[in-house]
Length: 554
Image 1 (tube, helix red, strand yellow):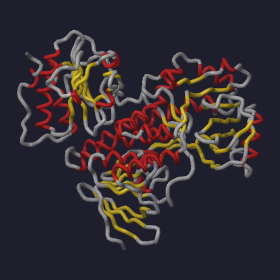
Image 2 (cartoon, rainbow, N blue to C red):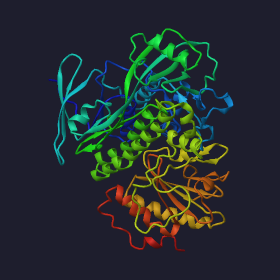
Image 3 (cartoon, rainbow, N blue to C red):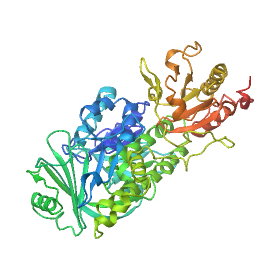
Image 4 (cartoon, helix red, strand yellow):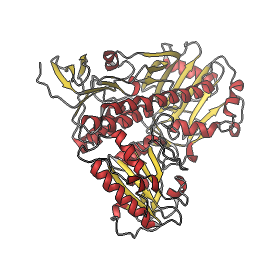
């Protein structure tokens, strides 16, 4: 039995979800161990789509530039309905998205994971512990630690105790089973997938191309490098479960008129398409994340993205609890916020699934699904993750007056602030805490915005030290009260436009996961303190400041 090396958080599973969670905890100074029962890093492609909201996350953590080096840009999807002319085929074109990433990336998951591992190694000297399997978890309730038994490649066992254990260990999650969490759902179809070289390709290889008829489905797109990714499914499973998969893929391609010639596959796999969601995401000090909590149809390529966003949501909250800055009750918001997103992802995937894999229904009868007003815009915003919102479940201070623009729980849009040298709003957010953006309204008194911002920041620093950075945005950037790193001009007016800032100056509090926490007019500045008190334990020697409700008064 090895001597244990006890972390503050034990992460089980070193796929994309576990890697993102590891990053979010490490950047906040939490001691972790990241264990993985696989023999080593994956050498197969598996997931291959990275959407806009995930790229905004990677931009935030400083890894987007490396991912761009191993990705291929994809403008969107083409749905090839039989018998229709090319210009009459429905499309979901992502190039209209209001983001720095108006497209999605195609990537080999093994390359993707390598970028994340290299980032963790370079910044935090962390290497996942492969060939290390969790074989037992003993739960306690209340404040007791969790005890886990690890089995290493040489057969030795190690007892590890940790205050928190997070299962990022996939649809067959050991942690979920140990936590006694149910995982209910249904099988909706089965699918085969291969990475292979193709010839005789006549369609645009930049796009994701969906081909189908009444009982067959095939999806083709070019991956970075020489290979193509092909998905295939059929109504009966005859082709999916055929022994000779290359021949089965070729026959399906011929039957539905794809026209391609399939080479020798480099990798082939098949699996049942399941729609499952966990009964809950936490049991005491055991949590589950990613595929351990929800799986669904791969239509739309949202799976890996939703899983990573789960970890992005959980990471900053769990770090605050581990470090004693927050009460564990805030972890309830992880499920409250992410479970509805899991349901949205499932709904979005099934909407595409019904179009391309609605077996037994003639394609022309499915075609009207693509003609519903707003179908394209709604689909791309949902699948990209930009439309995912916590608005219906987040709490805001009582009496907070509603302003126009992004609401609490909605994505915080990016905006160009300064053209030269280039500075974006997301540059301001690139740190582990909350960001308070103080914005002067059009024609409003800049000195009042400065005064309120300074006073509020002082009160925050006293009550919740180190949790919030303040950034001033005014019509000019020559105010000497704030240094260069903490003030900007909105030179193009993008921030004012995207946050609907009119004549009323406001304070916008943005969470560490790039969602709006709350927004208020200057006279409601005391609500900022009320809001932060729901997330963090106030310094016990700093009383609630009287008279803060009049902070905006001159």
